[in-house]
Length: 239
Length: 257
Image (cartoon, rainbow over the protein chains, first blue to last red):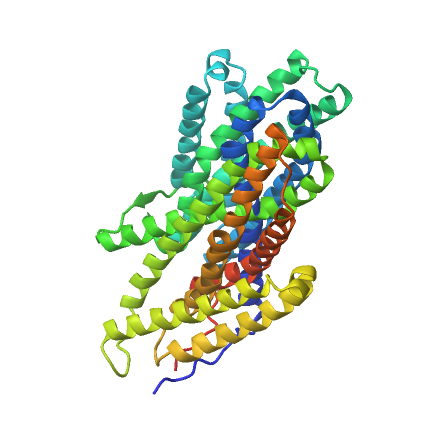
């Protein structure tokens, strides 16, 4: 009555290489964003409530390992994702150099604007205001991509990954340029001066790391939406 | 010159959202599945990659403070993330099954119930075997025995499930989600049936020991070992599970026919 289902594994290099990239992207991405959620939902609210000696143990013994997985999984996620996107662009007959240049330039602009926002004390004092400002700037980045990145007959998939991946590269730059350097100094400080509060410049760097981490948490939701929409909710139509 | 002009020219993308409501239910379920799944499996990786070595590195008094402070919050997101992931995934899978071609015999509704019944039955039996196995002292002592038995069982159950539920024209997507989702179901049962009941008691005992000095019962080490084995099994199961989930839409391997 029931027919059997033979396994027919694709044997061509392209299908297998792309599946490998997707799987790597998925595994590394889950590690990265899962740890981002752990930092935002579990460890950031917890740390201030702990006794200083216990907090010290957590910072010097747990954070280095967690941050190692966090930053390397961010790099692997982006590397696999960008490689995959370039394959999609080439299948799309895209002007690849132009597309990548405009894409990178827009992301750099966002990184620069956020660096300016981090200098405004009105925003750094109020984390909700900072998060809203960053969400607005990243929204503009996505909007600009739908205007300036598009080439004739660009596929929905290529553009949706451009917008979502643009958020992803911005988040990776937050990890590597802001969160990790501040935490690295903090871990070293806690190891050398147990129980001492950090000096003012380190406290300011930690505050920036916290703000950026909070903004990254909220940005992960549109990021994942565009990633899921790339294959499953076509809404971009290029002229 | 024409190339230079084309560099300066910009095309725009219009946003044309799909108009049927079903598409939005699909993407809503996918998005919930994605976000909850990242929370669940991300925390699973945190427990396996960060927390297990961390717990070995700290002394007993510190553990007495860290365990009751850190684990309840992390385990709350972990176990509820698991529930939302599986519920959203299951709803999505049932929607996909409604779009499958007409099976050769029986109505589509009967066929759906039959598939779900076989699916639940096979994967729950697999989990029940695991549940009793990890209580056996030789398996609890040596995690490699559990790993080998689990690999054999998952391959057998996956094969049998595919064999029993496929009909001509069945899509790779539905079959692949059946296999990956079955592993996900086993992982959910590990969370709610082994890891959380054990951790709940360990957290309470550790807290009472740190606050009132009541001794930690010897049963704690046995439960901790079981929870560890189930958590390690989940970490390894997540790799083929995620492969099947990604393969559902992007790597056709099953051919109904």
